[in-house]
Image 1 (cartoon, rainbow, N blue to C red):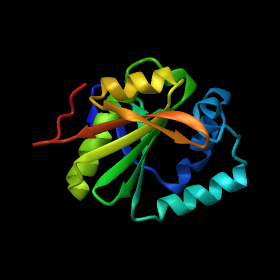
Image 2: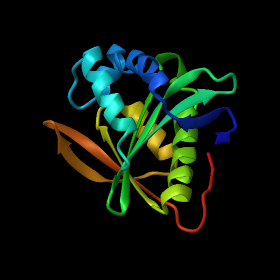
Image 3: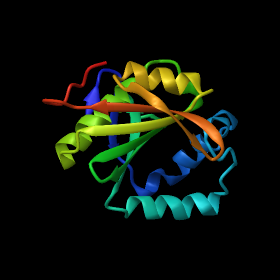
Length: 165
Protein backbone atom coordinates (compact mmCIF):
# COMPACT_ATOMS: atom_id res chain seq x y z
CA UNK A 1 0.00 0.00 0.00
CA UNK A 2 1.32 3.49 -0.89
CA UNK A 3 0.76 7.02 0.41
CA UNK A 4 2.62 9.93 -1.21
CA UNK A 5 6.31 9.32 -0.46
CA UNK A 6 6.14 5.99 1.34
CA UNK A 7 4.76 2.52 0.94
CA UNK A 8 4.57 -0.44 3.26
CA UNK A 9 4.85 -4.11 2.46
CA UNK A 10 4.84 -7.25 4.58
CA UNK A 11 8.31 -8.02 5.90
CA UNK A 12 10.07 -11.19 4.78
CA UNK A 13 13.00 -13.16 6.16
CA UNK A 14 15.20 -11.33 3.62
CA UNK A 15 14.59 -8.09 5.55
CA UNK A 16 16.11 -9.36 8.80
CA UNK A 17 19.55 -7.82 8.30
CA UNK A 18 18.20 -4.43 7.17
CA UNK A 19 16.01 -4.20 10.26
CA UNK A 20 18.90 -5.27 12.48
CA UNK A 21 20.94 -2.38 11.11
CA UNK A 22 18.17 0.08 11.93
CA UNK A 23 17.55 -1.16 15.48
CA UNK A 24 21.28 -1.17 16.21
CA UNK A 25 21.52 2.59 15.77
CA UNK A 26 22.47 4.21 19.12
CA UNK A 27 19.63 6.75 18.80
CA UNK A 28 17.11 3.94 18.32
CA UNK A 29 18.49 2.05 21.31
CA UNK A 30 18.22 5.22 23.41
CA UNK A 31 14.53 5.58 22.39
CA UNK A 32 13.61 2.04 23.45
CA UNK A 33 12.37 1.06 26.88
CA UNK A 34 15.05 -1.60 27.45
CA UNK A 35 17.87 0.59 26.13
CA UNK A 36 20.17 -2.25 25.21
CA UNK A 37 21.71 -3.38 21.96
CA UNK A 38 20.15 -6.61 20.75
CA UNK A 39 22.71 -9.24 19.61
CA UNK A 40 22.28 -10.40 16.00
CA UNK A 41 21.45 -14.00 16.98
CA UNK A 42 18.71 -12.80 19.35
CA UNK A 43 17.32 -10.50 16.64
CA UNK A 44 17.27 -13.33 14.08
CA UNK A 45 15.33 -15.54 16.50
CA UNK A 46 12.87 -12.72 17.32
CA UNK A 47 12.43 -11.84 13.64
CA UNK A 48 11.71 -15.43 12.62
CA UNK A 49 9.18 -15.85 15.45
CA UNK A 50 7.58 -12.49 14.59
CA UNK A 51 7.09 -13.47 10.95
CA UNK A 52 5.36 -16.67 12.04
CA UNK A 53 3.15 -15.13 14.72
CA UNK A 54 -0.45 -14.76 13.45
CA UNK A 55 -1.08 -11.95 15.96
CA UNK A 56 1.89 -9.87 14.79
CA UNK A 57 2.11 -7.94 11.56
CA UNK A 58 5.52 -6.66 10.42
CA UNK A 59 5.82 -4.21 7.56
CA UNK A 60 8.80 -2.66 5.87
CA UNK A 61 8.50 1.04 5.17
CA UNK A 62 9.95 2.00 1.80
CA UNK A 63 10.37 5.13 -0.29
CA UNK A 64 9.38 5.48 -3.94
CA UNK A 65 12.69 3.88 -4.99
CA UNK A 66 12.10 0.82 -2.74
CA UNK A 67 14.80 1.89 -0.26
CA UNK A 68 14.12 0.67 3.27
CA UNK A 69 13.12 3.53 5.58
CA UNK A 70 12.09 1.50 8.62
CA UNK A 71 9.79 -1.05 10.14
CA UNK A 72 6.21 -0.90 11.38
CA UNK A 73 4.83 -3.52 13.77
CA UNK A 74 1.30 -4.27 14.95
CA UNK A 75 0.63 -6.69 17.80
CA UNK A 76 -3.00 -7.74 18.02
CA UNK A 77 -4.24 -7.58 21.62
CA UNK A 78 -7.95 -8.52 21.73
CA UNK A 79 -9.81 -5.51 20.25
CA UNK A 80 -6.68 -3.36 19.85
CA UNK A 81 -3.49 -3.39 17.89
CA UNK A 82 -0.40 -2.14 19.66
CA UNK A 83 1.77 -0.16 17.26
CA UNK A 84 5.52 0.25 17.08
CA UNK A 85 7.57 2.09 14.47
CA UNK A 86 11.27 2.59 13.92
CA UNK A 87 12.90 4.60 11.15
CA UNK A 88 16.39 4.59 9.71
CA UNK A 89 18.49 7.56 10.85
CA UNK A 90 18.44 9.23 7.41
CA UNK A 91 14.65 8.86 7.20
CA UNK A 92 13.74 10.67 10.41
CA UNK A 93 12.23 14.14 10.31
CA UNK A 94 10.78 13.90 6.79
CA UNK A 95 7.18 13.01 7.68
CA UNK A 96 7.54 9.34 6.72
CA UNK A 97 6.51 8.09 10.17
CA UNK A 98 2.99 9.58 10.21
CA UNK A 99 2.39 8.46 6.62
CA UNK A 100 3.52 4.89 7.40
CA UNK A 101 1.43 4.81 10.58
CA UNK A 102 -1.72 5.81 8.68
CA UNK A 103 -1.04 3.27 5.94
CA UNK A 104 -0.41 0.52 8.47
CA UNK A 105 -3.54 1.25 10.49
CA UNK A 106 -5.58 1.19 7.27
CA UNK A 107 -4.10 -2.18 6.25
CA UNK A 108 -4.73 -3.70 9.67
CA UNK A 109 -8.29 -2.35 9.64
CA UNK A 110 -8.92 -3.80 6.17
CA UNK A 111 -7.30 -7.12 7.08
CA UNK A 112 -8.62 -7.73 10.59
CA UNK A 113 -11.42 -5.23 11.16
CA UNK A 114 -9.59 -3.89 14.20
CA UNK A 115 -10.23 -0.17 14.48
CA UNK A 116 -8.45 0.69 17.76
CA UNK A 117 -4.70 1.29 18.00
CA UNK A 118 -2.37 2.00 20.92
CA UNK A 119 1.21 3.19 20.93
CA UNK A 120 3.66 3.74 23.74
CA UNK A 121 6.57 6.16 23.49
CA UNK A 122 9.14 7.18 26.06
CA UNK A 123 8.00 10.54 27.39
CA UNK A 124 11.44 11.96 26.48
CA UNK A 125 11.20 10.66 22.90
CA UNK A 126 9.75 13.87 21.45
CA UNK A 127 10.11 12.84 17.75
CA UNK A 128 8.01 9.68 18.29
CA UNK A 129 5.41 11.57 20.30
CA UNK A 130 5.14 14.12 17.49
CA UNK A 131 4.93 11.42 14.80
CA UNK A 132 2.03 9.68 16.57
CA UNK A 133 0.24 13.00 17.06
CA UNK A 134 0.71 13.98 13.41
CA UNK A 135 -0.72 10.60 12.39
CA UNK A 136 -3.92 11.38 14.32
CA UNK A 137 -3.12 9.49 17.52
CA UNK A 138 -4.37 11.22 20.68
CA UNK A 139 -2.42 11.36 23.93
CA UNK A 140 -4.26 9.19 26.44
CA UNK A 141 -2.27 9.32 29.64
CA UNK A 142 0.97 7.86 30.88
CA UNK A 143 2.25 4.58 32.24
CA UNK A 144 5.53 3.09 33.34
CA UNK A 145 7.36 0.59 31.13
CA UNK A 146 10.69 -0.91 32.19
CA UNK A 147 10.88 1.73 34.93
CA UNK A 148 10.51 4.59 32.44
CA UNK A 149 7.62 7.02 32.01
CA UNK A 150 5.77 6.36 28.76
CA UNK A 151 3.14 8.37 26.96
CA UNK A 152 0.15 6.40 25.68
CA UNK A 153 -1.34 7.34 22.30
CA UNK A 154 -4.58 5.97 20.86
CA UNK A 155 -6.09 6.08 17.40
CA UNK A 156 -9.48 4.88 16.22
CA UNK A 157 -10.77 4.36 12.70
CA UNK A 158 -14.46 5.22 12.90
CA UNK A 159 -15.94 4.73 9.41
CA UNK A 160 -13.36 3.95 6.79
CA UNK A 161 -9.60 4.07 6.36
CA UNK A 162 -8.37 7.63 5.96
CA UNK A 163 -4.87 7.52 4.48
CA UNK A 164 -4.73 11.10 5.72
CA UNK A 165 -1.50 12.79 6.61
